[in-house]
Image 1 (cartoon, rainbow over the protein chains, first blue to last red):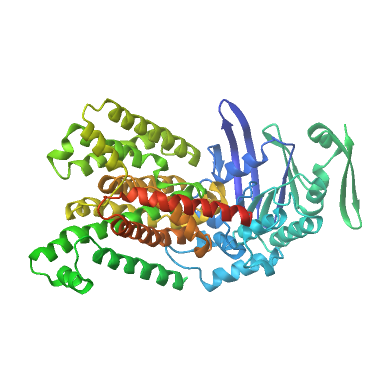
Image 2 (cartoon, rainbow over the protein chains, first blue to last red):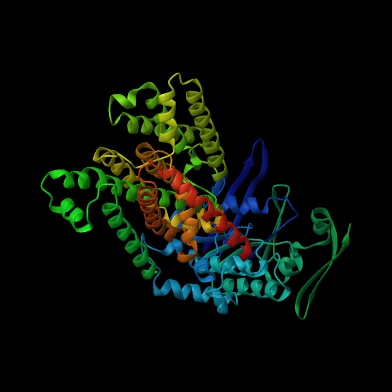
Length: 251
Length: 327
């Protein structure tokens, strides 16, 4: 089943095209890594696909009414904003906003969803902690938990693992992978190509406003692509412990 | 949470009762309440029904309105320093009132002044909407508000500057300090519908403001219609602040200090802060209006002066505490 479909999709800012002629189809069970150099348009692609910025062409998510879209896809922006010193539990409960009937209080099922999300992000003992007093990495995990609590078929996250310690980077990618194996789909932008290669089922490379490559990690991360788009050389090998990707130097 | 509701509503009710029984006319507590509820004509009933009751009602309404609008504005802008006056409505309402005082309209009819102030507020809303646009970020709203406030203040100064009549200038200065003295049920009738309508609009913002804790992008992706939220905020704030300024003049610091003070008690949730600040604002203004009558009964101490005198040090203390907690 298709969870996101973009056809002839583009985004303009002023006279210049930031994205153009994007065709992308994401189905259930996928963990899609959006990779590309700084300023390639990764964030713009995701925000545009959600209908948060003006765009041309067709996006299945942007075409939905706001509430239906909030049931179809959760979005974790790159800016990790927590404006008020609320408790972690309340913060994650905000993810249940689209599921609450007007003027209703959170039900037991909402609280259960919050507990599940906190558990997935290993924040079980953080319920009553003040979110703004957590470390940057802990805040990021709380915000990922917030997006998970929305319990949508599709989760889109903009650089969710930046600033996390190695264990939680791997843990978060494994959480996303397990969501994908449960039939959800996750679209995640990231700069760590090693983690992207190991955990994503599919990589989409964005460069100069278009999709430069789209496919399985091993097929995408070829030496010519790494040279032309990222300007690096890398060691890539499919080992008995999975795909290993290590950037080696600048071209 | 239930305890906070209980504490705040009890406090507000107690202060409302106190506002009814405190005043220059020397009437006992029991006598005054009897005169209010079952009086048949007579001077006591007149004092209670025509002077103290409208005054207490206005303090209750305006305090609640300013507290709520302050909480909504802080929640929307995600800034604890925001204030309902920020979008320029109180400034433009004051300008309308000043023009009515200067031209002598205010002296011609009792309700000319509040109506002129409301007209000023309406012009202010129109300018905010034109300048900030129906769509746009919170930043454009702040900038538009600051521009309108500055413009209204400049015109007010101009009127004072060119005023040929020192008595009118005097009256304008005193009016701008804000007061609830000598207000009648006519004023209540003018302000009540607008304040109720504005408060209802602001109350619908609770969930959207909660979602905005995560920023505009995340809130919009959770189904919050930011455009509608912004318009509701502008119209709600304009209605309550315009009506409040129209009947009571400029009363500062209530909308700024009260939400700040109550935030820790509602777990910092902007939605819950709305109603808590309504009670808190009503309590603060009722208390300030009682203080005005008790401290210098003979000198017509202005309400806005008292709220500023109480509010500013309180605010300094809050800033100090915030800094100490490293938040």
